[in-house]
Image 1: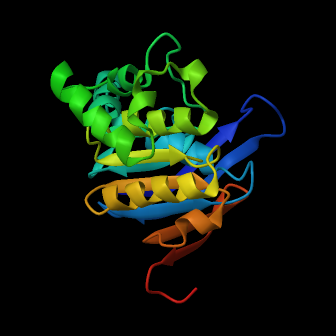
Image 2: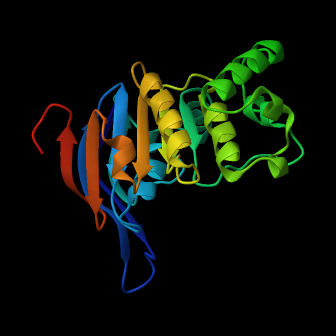
Length: 226
């Protein structure tokens, strides 16, 4: 589904000392499965996600999605991909404060409202919200509850690719496990990329990509010896 060819991202291009967030990354990702992307802060994990999802442009190199270079498609096509084929879970939840949990989950849905509300309620209950909490606004929810709403929102349009940046960072162990079980289930038919510092949540990943200083340092696949 995704293929990176010498993918490079440089910040501070106008300065003498350039900052390489990604250095000549070459890798291919499958059409489905749970992919763990790990590495220390500043290693380039989030930049990889932003460039693959068209939120940022590479400085050089290429990222192909289903055989088409992302640098060659129009802005409107990128927007279509982000709306219909990509889902996002960021470290910050970006919920709308005046909307309830349920309303936040359906805000970007591309199906009829009644159908979307039923689907959102099912998703929210599956990942640990209580029925009474569906009417709560973000200020009445804990950080972990707000993050679960963000995860449900990301799944609403059944994206082919789900990008998750530290999706369990604000969750306790029990709820982190619950969320990861839901993501693993989703990854049986879709591609789920999870960026994390916590290796324990991706121990069952189909593929683990280790990043160090902007480069891919190692790739492990399930069933292969480390």
